[in-house]
Amino acid sequence: MFCREVEVMSKKPNIVMLERNSVGPDIDVSCFEKLGNVTYYLNTVTEEEVRERTREADIIIANKSPLCEDTLKDSKQVKLICQFATGYDNCDVAYCKSRGIVISNVVNYCTDMVAQHTFTLALCLVQKLFHYDNYVKSGAYSAQDRFSNFDLPFTELAGKTWGIVGMGNIGRRTAEIAQAFGCKVIFHSVTGSSTVTAYRRVDKDTLLAESDFLSLHCPLSGLTENFIDRDALRKMKKTAILINVARGRVVNNRDLYEALMQEEIMAAGLDVVEKEPLSLDNPLCKIKDSNRLIITPHLAWGSVEARKRCVEETFENLRAFLAGEPRNVI
Image (tube, rainbow, N blue to C red; front, side, top):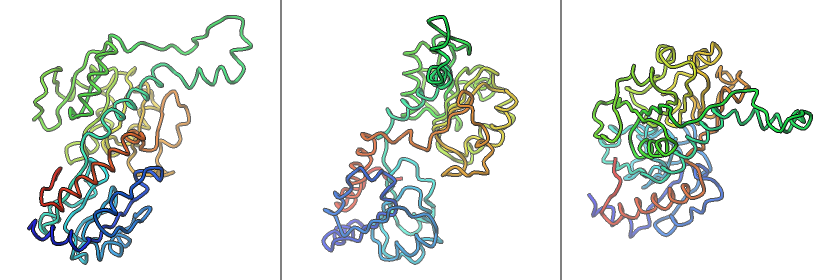
């Protein structure tokens, strides 16, 4: 098989980048032109767009574009899909394997940034930073007769229990940082196959009942979709803070809205939602109080450094494949 890829390399393969802007317009992606004839599309959303744009492609570079039988059946030349991401739930893996299409992803390129954003959300919520920033900027602080103000109580991370779902690279980095803050770390393995022994592993009910902070770092699958639903939220502490930097559908958004409105948990920080971009009919849009809910636009992974690493690693995946030595194969 790989002799054919080397032959394609000599003929300058057609590389179609479906979502050039998924790594940001500020990041240079011209390196791929060293490996083939590149066609750039800023964004590709619909199945019809995928069908039309990949028809002559040998190699596809994508992120969220749907890549399945319906979109690729007429794209007879495709041999490789490179994901500008770690996740690959946009790809029908079984179909691609049946066609002999290799899928490569990028691993461990944004671990530090996602862990950093996890704590950015948690610290903003637990310390009521938006409230106090607004308090000062509104003039209320200047009008008071004392040097400090703490009308909304806030607490420390030290001594709290930090629960984690998903003990991959990001989950383990989050655990290390939580420990540095003085937290006790527990985790739940959705598949039951985790080999991590550095932290206490618990069942789901124990995780929900004991966690002061619960952060989600798991892939989306049949086991994790709606992992946090109405039943799960009712089992959490009323003082708990939920952080989702995994995939939007791991948390049932309507159930979370109801739990926040009924004060069943204290707050939530989300970088991902069920449908992206955020649909205006998502009930979470109704919550304007940033002390209870913070939503960022799926940017936890997106530091300048991480996006550069993503491009560089995708380039290496593509180059290695053409050399007959594929890497990071799903």
